[in-house]
Length: 90
Image 1: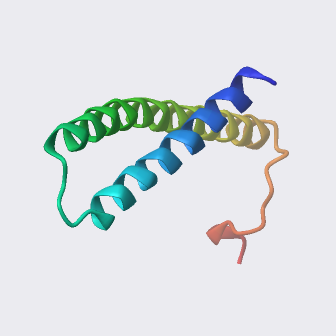
Image 2: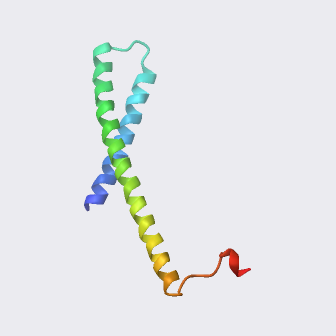
Image 3: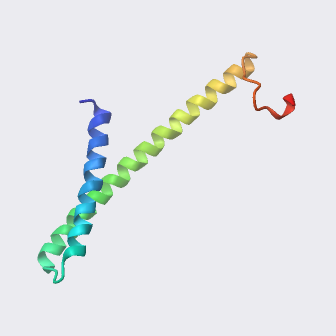
């Protein structure tokens, strides 16, 4: 399993676990304070990890976008740019 697959699995697992914690709270009529505190602590750790991973994903998307923009700019400079969709070509 690659590093990316492990991270994806971890994020999916963490989000599923958060959903289970929410379900647990919703199902409780009388909440055991100690058990509730344990769940809140676990949720806090999961939320922090998920936010970090989502930031990493966002950064990866930004890098891909920059690569695409750079490639498009290089193609236009060489005259290989695609003229479809350019307003001046009408």
